[in-house]
Length: 190
Image (cartoon, rainbow, N blue to C red; front, side):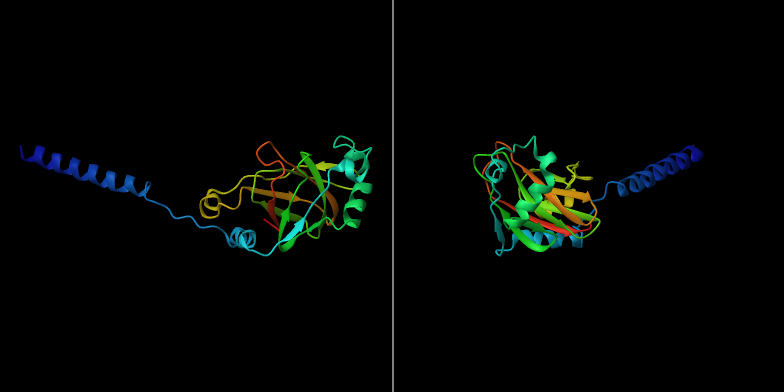
């Protein structure tokens, strides 16, 4: 009997040890936004902002439509830059007020680095169009859950690899965001 009692106690000790080890896997972890994301959040939340009002593409040239823009990309970029509808990477909070009668508008985007991350206060469709008409979608468009939890002002986080140049930034709205101002900041890197 004595050996059975020892075996029972040993089995119980092993079970308790396994339970304690197993609990370590389910301990609460703490996540924190990166300094990069925190910087973007602070900029988006600031009161100071540059307001940009991009026109519908047919207001720039009555013959242009969103489907013809890639073929006219260089002329579109020149026209947008000449009108002062310019986004640039840096610590500037931009408020983009799109036209209420168009679901797509364009901005001139000056890129000085090989990678940029665009943060926006609403869900918008964004792509870069180079001056040759090549449309580039974001390389990464997910929002880390710690950013979603700690900074509700960031609803879009898009990372693009691009060469330093001037682009047309396609700014597409949806039914929920059509005509609503959207805050944006563009930072170098990711």
